[in-house]
Length: 368
Image (cartoon, rainbow, N blue to C red; front, side, top):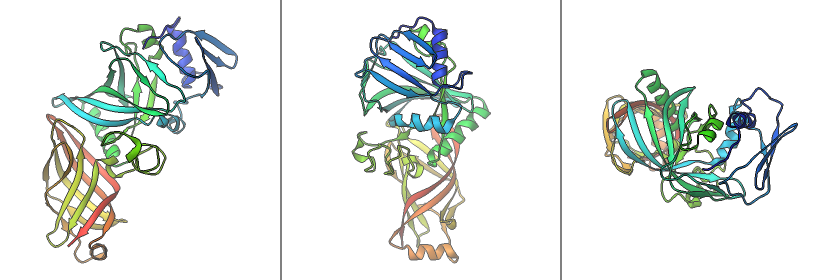
């Protein structure tokens, strides 16, 4: 991405004004004129600087100020980007680090194509942060590409998680536990003086900018909008809001309870294309509208291959005399939307995390 900037320090202040992280809180919007140069009109403040390698097919955008001090307002706008994961590939790992190649898509919600240029030897690097603590970095790279208007565009990045400190690991475990449970899971993308390779001025212009985002959803299949739940927003849950509320964020697909044998089958997704995941269930409970249906209190080890996988039958203890047993009896040969609470370990090659899952809406078939 080639951008000509006259004064990186001043441009950094412009960006801070745009994101409302400067001391001036009076700004409401920016008129952005897209001709041979950008013209940022900050009420009484007007500045011009030229942009070389951006391609726009419109002449004027009116952009609201992104208030990064107001997460709800900011996330509402940033969620329009609709970032989603398509595939994970494990690169390497040890006890404290894991490196993952991610194929993902980003939705350009503008009514114009945006041309970017990142050479194969260049990259865009951002810090991955939770509560202002850095737990890794994301390096986006590739050849020249164009973000087409009002459509999804495919990109590739390398995610490196580094959790040598116990406190960092706990932060990551809490974040992933919320993510898998289908709850709001916010992290920060932070930029530094060397975020954009071979462009020191542009890197300095975005230095110390931190952008909060919701963890992107994982979308299996070909990544088209044809299987987005029918609402056209591409999130897969069918409610039209662009955020994913499926049980397990799409990773926990469903289960089948076998009452007579006191067993259960679980269907889940391993998003990694090149390696198995070892899941150790420490304890788990299944409920329906708060009523206990069954529980597991003995460690169970599962080896989950790439793709969608249904486990063999796993021992589980069902309620046989209380309200839970009556719920199961009435639902026999039918299906329930079950709440699940579980503590489990996930091991990816040499890297292991212990997660807490607390999700609802898990489609569960009830069989004799």
